[in-house]
Image 1: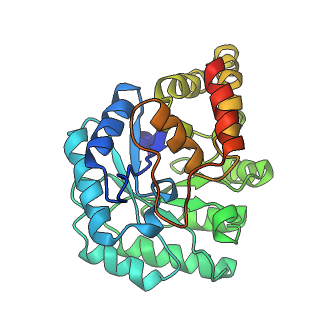
Image 2: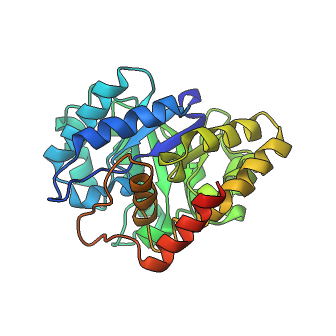
Length: 290
């Protein structure tokens, strides 16, 4: 669990104009994050546009990140979905050598009951050779993992953390208050991270960290050290940009920032499209203040 304390980044996937994977951009991004003080890398989360990337491409992306990383940081790989059997098959057949944990989102679209969510993670726990970070993001999945269900899942072998993006401080505090001492709680919301750490979380899996890893990691580290004066200073400095990059969906906003920083192109695969003009203007204004 301690491997995943502090700032982790949900990496974007750079594309070329022809929509193929931009491996040079991926290398540049990986080094940018490592040099920026990130504690671990998260490959093929939703920020990485994994729904439109084939399994073979996902493996190529993972291999490239592992190669560039050269064991400098822990690597988390996203394997989730709404077909439990498919996830189990991937865990048994995919070559996942070189990773340190799995990030697995709660099932989306089919909206299972709380018991169904629990049984889903129980099956993954039994099948996985790697530690698992569960992911609660009802804005994407259509179903909330309640605090009660998360606490049941926390007792399963291999489930070491939850990435909590419910947007509910009540849910988060109920989990923090009652979770086993060896179970981690990680923020999945950049703009709530400071308050979540103050409430007891151990860090964040971030989007804005793609662009400003140094500043955001400093904010997270200050908060974890109890230096809330300096943490607040950086939080409010970054907050306008944190809000702006999500105005028109993720990762549209952060890829526009990365293009402006010269790290990768502002390219996407449908149905994701570039941020609209109003969002780009808001981002431009927030970046100027930084």
